[in-house]
Length: 94
Image (cartoon, rainbow, N blue to C red; front, side, top):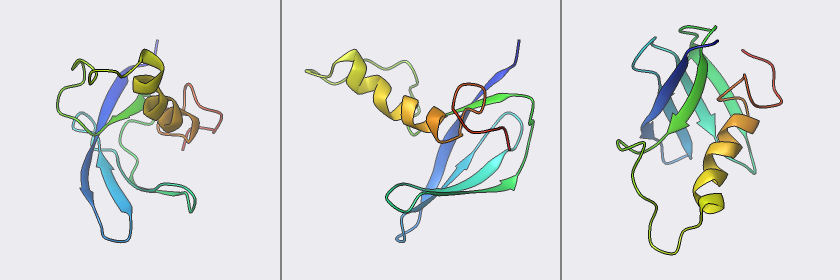
């Protein structure tokens, strides 16, 4: 079974590019969201681990009132589908 590492957004530039980093293995990447999606790996880190993303310091926090489970899962699903979690998404590991 592959290890799962949770990446954190470190900073966001005015251009919309976000820097994400894994505190466990040092993986770093630049991510730009759609409609002009791009991803650039700066440091590969542990390429055998599944990387998931979170922009909160509380990964298990309760959703906001009125938020459904599907609403809360949508950003995580999008991250996986665009390659942040290569074990789940359609893209190949980078």
